[in-house]
Image 1: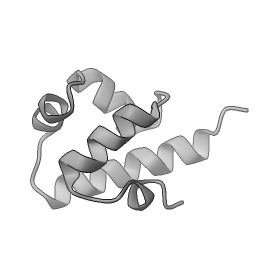
Image 2: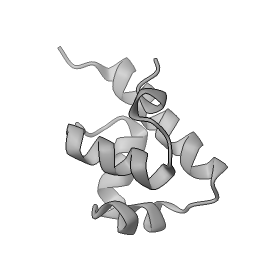
Image 3: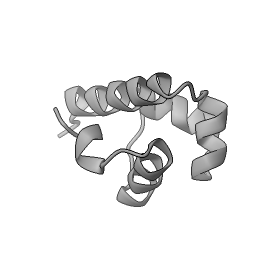
Image 4: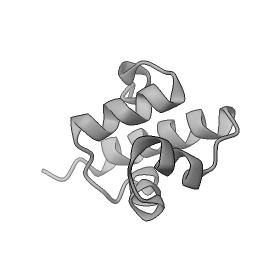
Length: 71
């Protein structure tokens, strides 16, 4: 089971929240301790995301995790 639709929705939600706050991918990567390329893959729905990374992203964006996984 690949969950392509869900990964794309998650990535889109992260990208929208990031853009809404005026945060670049590079800034968010630094805030979350990830690489910009990994963050790009997450936003494109091309990477699997562990719960620890998802929590760090949600905290950096100041949103509840449920908002990012609302699909």
